[in-house]
Length: 416
Ligand SMILES: Cc1ncc(COP(=O)(O)O)c(C=O)c1O
Image (cartoon, rainbow, N blue to C red; front, top):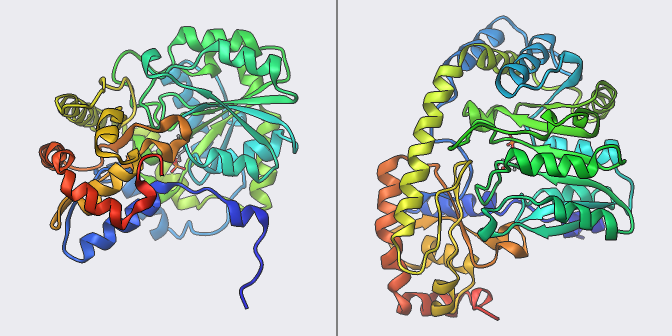
């Protein structure tokens, strides 16, 4: 007998990148050559001091429980980094550590939100926001990020949400933005802060790409006067220090919020592994130079990929201002081939050629607003990105292969 699952479990939306990754790996195991541009992971090793500190901590048997809020070394190093790099003056009492940035979506919802509350999300959006709000019975309300506005958030959308939603309570910001690569300018964040400041609207500011800024400097809403009291901002070591598998990140918030998140951690994960926290603290203290070298390499990859895609007929794309994602508009190609954008992504992986494939994601994996776009990450060496760029225009020209793929996968037929 199959056990009956909860409504939540039955309806949970997940990150498609992980399912496409599994398909890509299965094809590779059968001998297909696949360029993997589907998941937002780094092709580089974790930074050196982080690795050494983690190994040394295990050798010293620092392998037991530790404080739920995080070890003092990491909380202090994180607070110092926020001041040094982003001009946000906070102390360790403002920092709470968890296993990456993602857990803070759940913690934010549990600390602040009640069933029936409305949360504004700029969309396309990171796919785990809605399931984490669903867990609390919270309503996700979407405002579109527009290509013609370089995917920047607007204070007007926030104003409209606060004026029209029956129970507005929070907004989610994620800049630099996954999947579009859009960046919020200081003026955008100031205007949003001016709308929400002093109201009981809270901000979840998800900032995993704070070091992946390709023009100017990273701006966070935490720097806007008074916003530390209304914001929980999440940071991770996954992207900046190539540490995604270590599962480590932290959040910055008001000390009372930090204490409250600590209770949620106490009652769920207990704590993040102490040897991983020591590795993360070492990264913050000693690995800036290596991190910045990695960021330069990412910038080059992003430009290589976006400039190459821009040359393909029917692809409409600008260089992203941040992140290691490129988000081209491909609706002309989809319309010509009669395939959805995620169908196009699956076709380039599975259908276009028997021996070679490119894994990427359809924009609809990030909400309705992503339809007609593809998302590529820069998770492969440059020569592999070049191979993908050579392959894609050929793949988009093979109507016969598309037709065969659609017969086998009719769910990807446009308007099906
Ligand atoms: C917008 C956004 N939020 C959160 C995360 C999760 O980060 P982590 O794996 O460090 O928890 C990611 C990772 O891709 C992301 O793109």
